[in-house]
Each structure stands twice: as structure tokens, then as C-alpha cells.
Amino acid sequence: MTLSRGLDPAEPLDRSERRALTERLLRQLSAARDDDVETTDLEEQVIRINMPVARDIARRFENRGIAREDLCQVAYLGLVKAVRRHDAQPGHDFLTFAVPTIRGELRRWFRDGGWMVRPPRSVQELQPRIRTAEEDLAQRLGRTPHEEEIATELDLAPTQVRRARAAEGCFHPTSLDAGVAGSEDDRPVSLGDRIGATDPGFDQVEARAALAPVWRALSAKERSMVELWLFQDVTQAEIGRRIGVTQTQVSRLIAAALARMRGQLEGIVPTPRAA
Image: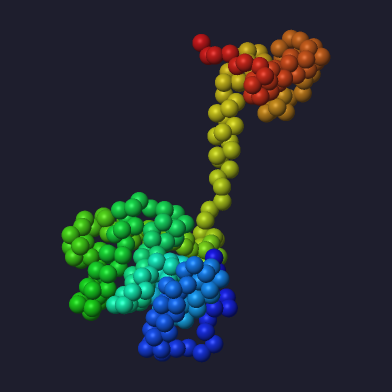
């Protein structure tokens, strides 16, 4: 549900005007629960005039790898829930109920829906504690605290702090086009440039692993003929002279050996087990 389009008030209200208008609309809403059309209209009015509050709350969750627009949409959803659940009785202030509802919706979204790569729950729960401790220590120490100091502050092992901080990018991993420190000649370099290509040796290893049992299944004579013809560029006539058979026989033997190997690789012909 996208709520931001068309719902911002034409003229911003100050805090007292917003509170008074919200209370009046909520009382009307409480009395109009049987009228679906009027209920929807009143709910939208309450949402519209309190959207600045939701945006202010969402702003406090910025700089954690999530786009501002997404945070605002989650905050608006929390505002909708607050409007629909609020009890418009005297003494039940709307913002006292709405603010924690919106914050809870944002925290819940960070916990359950904001991860592109989801770390363990223990790591998720540690991250806000670490951020708070880091800010407090920075103010007290006048510098950025070390991991060991944060760990001592939170009564944690340094490895726990290191693990939680390493997962910070899981909300929004760095783009492969993002610039990183340049090369020795100061040329601009992206993160993608630092990623190596696929090692061609992997294909060779895979081919060797697949061919090994098939190759061993050939007779010594067949292996010799195939090796001479395919890998040493020896003609079939020369192979025939070396092993004492005609060129035609060499051609037939090689063709039969290769066909059998192909069948074994494709699973058509069973590969004999090594003794």
C-alpha cells in the first residue's frame, strides 16, 4: 500500500493544531464505525495530517542501508495501524499510542523484511546495541571507540562485536559499480573490477573427474591409439604401422572406443567398475 501520494496536507499544521484536529476527527471516527464510507474518509484525514509525524520517526532510522522512501512507507503503515487500533476515549492521547506503534513497525520491518542477506537473530539484535554503545563511548572518549572497548561496555566478547559489525552491509550490499581505492596508477576502480574471473582450471578439473573412470575402462591398446591420434597428431596409417594393423582397422577401433566413452559419459552405456 502506497500512502504518500496525494495525502500530504496543502498547509502544514503546527503541533497543537494537529493534536486538536486529530482528537476531533478520532471522536467523529469512533461515532461513525457503522458507516464504511465516512469511516474511510475520516481515517484518511487522520493519516494525512499525521504523516509528518511518521516521517520524523522514519528519519531516525536512516543511514542503516535502507532507502528513505522505504522507511517512510513502513512508517505510514504503522500510522494506519495506529489509527485503526486507537481507542478515542478521553485521556487516550493519539500520539502516545501512535509513536510506539510506528517505531515498532519500523523495528519489526528491519528485523523481518529489511535484510537482503539475513544473519542469525543474535547478530540482528546485537547491532542496535552496538550502535548505541558506540555513540555513547564516542561522546565520552572524544574519539571512535575500539571493538574491545565496545565489547567491554556491553559485556561481550570482541568476536561477537566484530561479527555483528561485519553484517552491517546485509541490509543493502555495496554495488559492484561502487568506487573503491584506485590502483597504483590512480585509475578509477570499481568493486566489480576487483572480482576475479572464473578460473578455467575448474572446467579442466571437472572434465578430468568425469573422464577418468571412462578412460580407465578402455583397454591399453585403445588408450594408446586414442592418445596418439587425438593428442599427438599421429595419423591413423602411422598408428596402424606401429601396432601392426591396417588404417581401416585403426579407424574402426578408435571410432568404437570413442562411441563407448560417449555412451558411458551420457549414461547410456554403464561404466565398468575398476577392479
